[in-house]
Structures are given as C-alpha cells and as structure tokens.
Amino acid sequence: MKNIYKNSPKNLNKAKKLLRKNNIIVVPTETVYGLAGNAYSNSSIKKIYKLKKRPKINPLIIHYNNIHSVKKDAYLDEKFIKLYKKFSPGPLTYILKKKKNSKISMLANANLETIAVRFPKNKIVRDLLQNLEFPLAIPSANISSAISPVNCVDVLDEFGKKIKFILDGGTAKIGLESTVVNLHGKTQILRPGSISKKQISQVLKKKISILKKINKITSPGLLKRHYSPGIPVKLNCKKKEDKAAFIVFGKKYRNGNGVFNLSKSGNLKEAARKLYKTLRKIKNLKYKKINVVKIPNSKIGIAINDRLKKAAY
Ligand code: TXA
Ligand code: MG
Image (cartoon, rainbow, N blue to C red; front, side):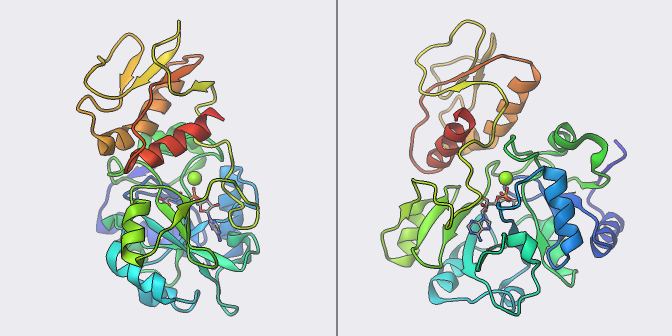
C-alpha cells in the first residue's frame, strides 16, 4: 500500500523532512503505533488533536531520545533518575513538572504545569528522535476512545487515507500502552502497563498505588470509556452468550466458532500482545457483543483488565 513505508535510511529521511515541516506521520513503538508530530509546534499539535478527534483537555506524551534532551523541558528529581536508569528506554511514561521556559507547545499538555515524557525503545522511532532538533508528541494512532493500533493495517483501519506516511515496524512487541507514573505530587500509577506497580515500588523503595477514582486535575485524559470496539463488552463471563464473540484465556478453551483465545498457554504477555488485535478483529467481523472470561489480575494482567474495563464502560 502506498502510504506504508519500510524502514530504510531513505524513508527515515523522508519522515524527518515531513516532521520538520510540521506534518503528522505514524511511527511504530514497542507498545502501540503512534501519531507523531513536532512537540514544539502549535500547528503540529493542532493537527494531531484534529486527526484523533481528541478532546483538548487530554494531554499528549512527549517522546525523547534520552535524559539529556528532556532537561530543558522538565525538572528531573531523584525518583525520576532512579526509574529512568532502570526502565528507560522502554514502556514507562513519567509525569514531571514542566519548566517555565520549555518550548513544548502549551496545546500539547492542556495548560497543565506538568508534562508526560517517555523514552521509547523501538529502534525506528529512536533513530528518528536521535536525528531531530525537537521531541515528538506521540499519542496512540487511533481515533479518540477507540482501539489502539498494533500494526500498519490497524492504522489504516482507523484513519484510511487521512494519513499519508506510516513507517512500518511490524507488530508492536508489547501491544498495550506504556505505564504512566505520576512523579509530581503523589507518586502514583495513573495508567497500568507492562511495567508493574511492584517493579516501580521496588526501585523507589516505597509503596505506591494505582489511581482508582479519576480526578480531573491529576489525570484529565483518563477517560472512563476508552479502547472501545463500539459494541457492548461484558466482563467475567463464565460462558458464551448466543451470537456473542467470546474472548478467553488458557488451555481450557479452543479457538473457532466465535471463541477467541488470547493465550492458549495462559501467558499474560501473549494475551496483552493479542488483546487489541482481537478486539479489532471482532469489531470488523461485525459481532454485536463481546463476552470476556475472567483474566488473572496480576503482572500485565492488571493492565489488560484496566483496558477491558474501559472498553466495557
Ligand atoms: O505507549 C504509549 O504511551 C503510547 C505510544 C505511542 O508511545 N502513547 C500513548 O499516548 O498511549 P496517549 O496519548 O494515547 O495516552 C497518553 C496518556 C493519556 O491517558 C493522558 O491523559 C496521559 O497520558 N497524560 C499525558 N500528559 C499528562 C499529564 N501532564 N498529566 C497526567 N496525565 C497525562
Ligand atoms: Mg491512546
């Protein structure tokens, strides 16, 4: 397809040129695919919000190459340094206090005094960041409140011809968005992901919690309904209802006849990788409702259940 571009030096150059002209492109990351734009440019940020139909109060994550490039935009404290050393580059997003003289577009962070920063691990997006003069705002490449894309075809499913340039990085390794940890004010997980509460607590040597009640100020964008396939989703089902698609987990279940197994071997990482793909497949097969079995609520299962709960809202 003509808007999908393979990873090559020539195409990376094309991508850089587009970004420097404040165009929006799609890039792979290890979590999900994202819409990338120059974080210093108001016009780029406006284009991102418009494409995603995203409410302006839902701020974006700013993606950097390394710790040096983030210094001019945010205050870096001890907690951040500890976590950075352990988990970055990788699927962890930090909420930090923004510097007054930062050049990050105010439109990207909903006028908050904080910014979300992440250092992605995917080699393609890292190559891009290394060679640009600005960081990239990269929200997931889906229409607001819909299912996040884990490959190029998913991106086309979301945006069709509206996106002119998609860098192909194959299927996203993790398949769920990064863990978001708040480090300004109360240390807390705002969005669970593959890096768990336990792992973060261990590094900080401190007990932390996962945000339960959604609070407008600390987490404006954590909408209750999200990751939605657009049809009713029922959780913790013991069996399949008539005409429903049934999402299951573990060796007890077989695929086929409307049954979709996230992992026959009961592997939560595999289930995470397959979750969005499965939801999208079911949506495109035009099922009218989805039943989901109980998924173990440990490790990345916590993030899977978080997404399922929002999809069911
Ligand atoms: O894995 C990821 O993080 C992906 C890939 C593409 O990097 N990106 C992603 O971005 O998931 P997005 O825009 O779909 O989700 C960003 C989340 C939202 O829940 C938003 O509310 C929160 O981060 N966020 C951003 N800035 C924030 C801030 N200053 N304070 C609190 N939450 C913030
Ligand atoms: Mg998103």
